[in-house]
Length: 292
Image 1 (tube, rainbow, N blue to C red):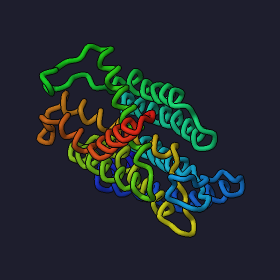
Image 2 (image 1 turned 60 degrees about the vertical axis):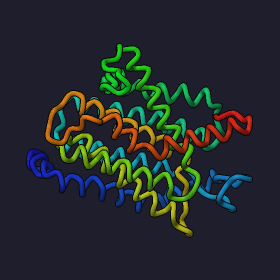
Image 3 (image 1 turned 30 degrees about the vertical axis):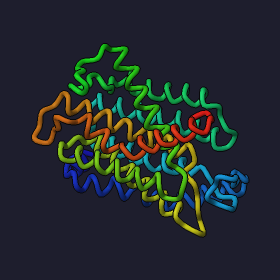
Image 4 (image 1 turned 180 degrees about the vertical axis):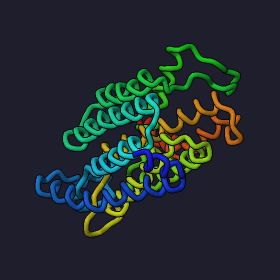
C-alpha cells in the first residue's frame, strides 16, 4: 500500500488512472444496465417535445454514479487521504446516493418540484454541514465580504439547487449535458491539478471518465441510453461541489495558482447551464407557465 501511495503522488499518473478506470468500468457495465432496463421495460417514452421517436433505455445516471464512486473510493484508499478528506469523500458519496435514488424515482414515476427541492436540499446539507464546505464570503464581489454562518449555509444551498437543476434542464439532446459537464469539470480539475489537491483531482477526473464512458453509449445508435434525472442531478451536484471548493480554496490558500477573481471565474465556468436556465425560466414565464 505504501508503494501505491508513493506511486500515485505522481499527479499525471493519478489523472490517467482516474479517467481510465471509470471508462473501462462503463464499457462492461452499460450493456448490462441497458439489457436490464429493456427486460423490465423501464424505458423513456417519447412525448411531443422529445427529440427521440422510439422507446429508449434510461437510468444512465446509475452507471455514471457506480463507475465514479468505485473509482473515487478506491483511489481515496490508495492515496491515504487525511481524515478530513475521507469525511468529504464519504459525504459526497452519501449525497450522490440520495440524489441518484431521487432521480431514479423521478425517471420512473415522476415527482413534484417541491419534493425534488426538499431532497436536493438534504443532499446539499450533507456536505455543507458535515464538511463545512460552503461559500463563507462573497470575496469583495458587490462590496460583500464575510457572510454570517446561516446566510452562508443558505446561499450555498441555493448554489447547489441552481447548478443541479440547471443541468437537469440542459439534458435535452444527446451528448449535450455530458459534454458540457466534461468541459466544466476539466476546467476545475486543471486548477486542482496545479495546486496538487489530490481529493479534488480524483473527483474531477473520475467524473470525466464516468462521462466519457456514458457518452460512448449515449451517442450510440445500437446501444443507446439516456442519463435521466439520476444522471443530470448527479453531474450538477458534483460540479456545484467543485465550484464551492474552488471558491473556498482561493479564499483561504495562497499559492502561485490561486485567483483573486475566483467568484467571477466560477460564474464564467458555469455560465452556460446558468444562462440557459435563466432563458428557460423567462420563456416559460412569458408563456404564463410555471418555470418549474
